[in-house]
Amino acid sequence: MHVVQEQDGRLYALPTREARFFSGLAMRIIQHLAKKDSYPKEMAQALKVHEQKVYYHVRKLEKKGIVQVVRREEHGGALAKVYALAAPSFSMVCRELAPAAKVPKSAHAYLEPFIDDGTFNGTIVVGSPDPHGPEKARSRDASYAIDFGVFLGTFLASARASVRLDTEVSKEDLSGNLILIGGPVINRITNLVNPKMPVRFDDRKNIHSLVSGKKYTSDDAGLVVKMKNPYNENAWVLVIAGKRYSGTRSAILAFLDKFDELSTGNRHRNKIHAKVVDGIDTNYDGVVDDVRILE
Image 1 (cartoon, rainbow, N blue to C red):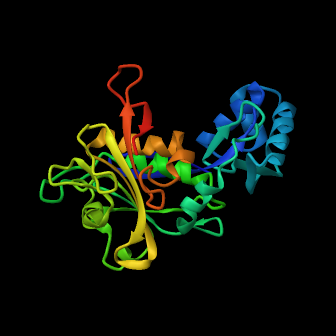
Image 2: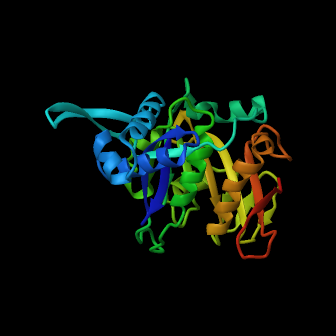
């Protein structure tokens, strides 16, 4: 498990371990070790508690895999165990796990090309945050790659995934399985495959469905298209994009909230996996927080 955060267009991650609730002193020991490696007597002095209390909690934390011995040092004529945190980050579990909703078989089949024996098999491509392309556009979609990566992680045994900026993708990369996040203005790879998509962006960057013949002009409209890779018939492409930033958000929300419906075919032609979605601002704060599938 990792804690992932987007900063300045880059993804940063910390290895993370699960932690249950601890007593006040145990949490103080963890906080102390977050600042420096230490041995029990030193911890007791710093925390102003009896040394035996520190020993008691350190042993429990060691059994739970929260702290570990990193070395031994001589202090007062004896060797003292020096402890450190076993991971730089921990997630706090506040209650027992509950059974998750059963994922339909169609959902697993939908993602199957991108998952090989529990491991991600492909590359997630997002637009560069630097000005690029004919319109010198800057992408703000990196955070959506995080959201989609968290969603994808629920199907994976390994949390590792390859994420690249569109400006970093080579010709060789184009022949693999690709998940493209963002529209053709800010993601040049989306722009390359757009003419082959059954639901695509037209010259005005509105969404045009060749399946239904309809056009969608809302800034909150997005599309999700899964199709064969036009550069390699043995690979697949999944495009998650909107006319604008909010439209891409709508398409990501469709994965998070309506994946069972999203993983089926288009309403007009069930064998084509191409959906059009529309974002909804339910609390009128200017941010899309719900989504409906239009076709």
